[in-house]
Structures are given as C-alpha cells and as structure tokens.
Image 1: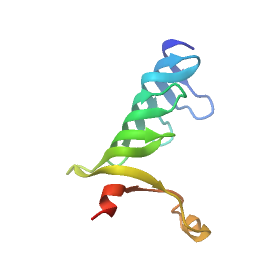
Image 2 (image 1 turned 180 degrees about the vertical axis):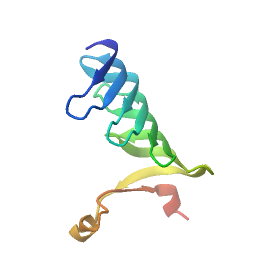
Image 3 (image 1 turned 30 degrees about the vertical axis):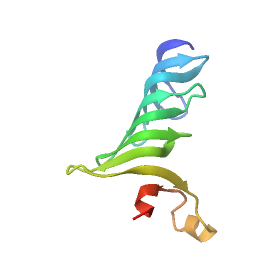
Image 4 (image 1 turned 135 degrees about the vertical axis):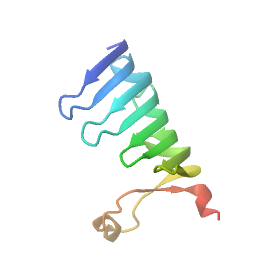
Length: 118
C-alpha cells in the first residue's frame, strides 16, 4: 500500500486511516483501537511507529507529545479529566524492578523525569 488509505486489521478490528509507504503507516494518520476506543493521531515514521502526536484515551485522558515504539517517551503532557489537570515533562519507561512488581499489575509505568527532580 502506498499513498492515502484506510485499513481494518482483521485480528483486532483496529482501523488506521492516513498515509502509507511501502505497506507501512508513514506520515500523518489516525489509529483507532476497537477494544477500548482510544485513538492515536499524529505522525508515523518509516518503520510504521507513531513518533509524535496525541493519544486520546478513555476517561478523558489525553497524552500529547513524543512517542517511542508506540508508547509515550520524551517531551509530552498528560491532560486528565474535565478539569484539564495536566502533568508535563520528559517521560521515560520504568521497567519493573522485580517479578513482584509485575505480579502486582505494575508491569510498565511512565514517569516524568521532570517530576523526579522536585
């Protein structure tokens, strides 16, 4: 696939609409997750990963900023709820320090590097 188009993923019913290059998402596009109705809007790199944009999640949570491998990473801002409370910073992935962390459901957390400096 090359150019503009929409693709529905048979295994998940997720939908991507936007630019394609060599069969991969590349350029501006919108990815809709059918399971939780969250949406990724933004720019996809040549590997097909979102690089910068917005992740609009359920419960009025929006992440705007940089991504790495489909997850918030780098400069960004989380805006939460109808009051639009927000947390800005440079986000990094925190890998669990032990198997106990994983068992308690905290497999991956996103922390603001700027918040750690406080």
